[in-house]
Image (cartoon, rainbow, N blue to C red; front, side, top):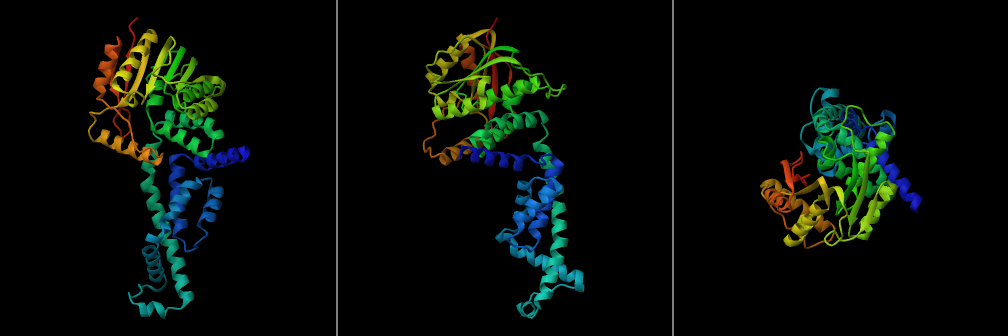
Amino acid sequence: MGRGKELFAEMVFRMRTDGATPGRQAAALAVGVFIGCTPLFGLHLGMCLVAARLFRLNVVTMYIGAQISHPIIAVPLYFSELQAGSLLRRGSFYALSMAEFRALPWHQFLLDLCLGSLVVGAALGVAFGFAALPVFRRTMRDPLRVRVADAASRRYLSAGALAWEGARSRLKGDAVFTTLLERRLLPEDGLLVDLGCGRGHLLVLLAETEAMVRDAVWPPLWPAPPTRLRLLGVERKPKVAAAALEALGEDGEIVVADARVWPIPSCRVCAAIDLLRELRPAEAEALVARAAAALEPGGALLLREADAAGGWRFRLLAAWERIGSLRRGEWRLRRRPRPIAAWADVCRAAGLVVEGEPFYGDGPFARALIVARKPR
């Protein structure tokens, strides 16, 4: 069963990542729309599998495009194809009369439908492909984030396709991870402690970037990542901590403990990503104070939280998190958000110096990263 789970996850990985460049993704969508327009009901999935293999395109994107033949759209779609076939073959449209359609010979009906599906399918495929190309380019405009996310998320394949998909989506969609590399916010060596590390996405990403440098596959024009950091994560949920440890392997350590009472060791970097608003105000402030005390001189606290003063972007984030909690069966969502300026004041009260302006990233949600350093 374990081997079968790994094989299934590997299959999903290949299906999701094959032909992942913007041009090939747009081409896969166009071919999928063309296939969906054909009247070969029940064969669209098989046609997508064959076409993806022949043209080396992404089968998932292709099959999504084939859903243009959804029952809600199928009637007007195939009616337009029938009319297009009639116009091409006879030079005129069918009259909108049930009597004429009943008197239509079946072979003529099929001929017009097949001919029209080729024309309408090709036109719609080209239109969808060109319309989607800018979207695919925008989602892949950050090659550093895309490549590192793909490499790091592979470590979660052994936990199953869902774990890999979740890690890949988080690492690609959340700019906070690669921002630490792009802005050179991490030291070259020392101990990094990730409080409330969850499934260890930050730690696994840093471990994988070090492996990419070691294997000489890190592009020389990209910002050089740290290669001698010691990685330590703290997570209070045993199952989540086990998933983080499985992905991290021997490249770091995961401690099952509650960050509110766990004694933080002396470290160069302390990270708290989306953690403090889960705590009561006094607990959050005490945790920041303990993290500040544990930092070495010049060390940094990396604090990322939702900005309650973020207007519609914060309300959108709150709605998204509510949907996620309901999906997990959590009816009560305990959040204690503050304006990001208030979190900066908490860092200053702990004796830290807040550097620059908060970084919000490029997503739609009001989440900001604060860098607060301990004076030397």
